[in-house]
Image (cartoon, rainbow, N blue to C red):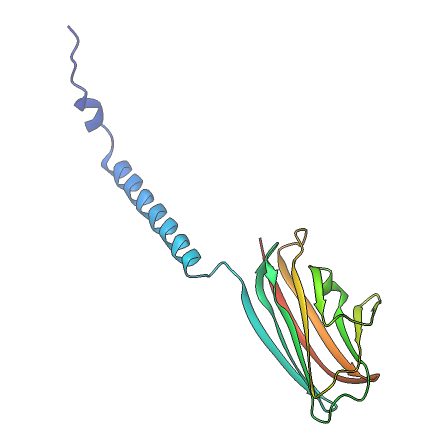
Length: 174
């Protein structure tokens, strides 16, 4: 009659193989826990940045997405400050390569005109009252945007006279 002892086969497995398998499972579990903690901590989400500049009596501050993902709402908010007030219309120029990575749903205030060149998208706004103008662009990173760095430059001109410009970069994650 054949022996029904099944422990003989289990005892023949090398201890080193068992130890490697145990270490592999522990490393995998630690990796999964770290990814989950990073997600809970907000490491994979949207991060904003600020860029500031001054020129010809005009100071600007731009709040933009430093890190974003495709399909996420992406902040782009420009504050233009001119101590003596604005002497005419305000032109805001955004790099075309940066603007092409966004799906824009609304710009507030509504520009009076928009011009597109090879390098820039230029919005012209009516002369604002007071010394501060805020431009809000309601947008999200385009679903077809490739992951990687997208560089942008925004220039502000008042009544045709160039004021300040800022350069910034948004990293688009997959």
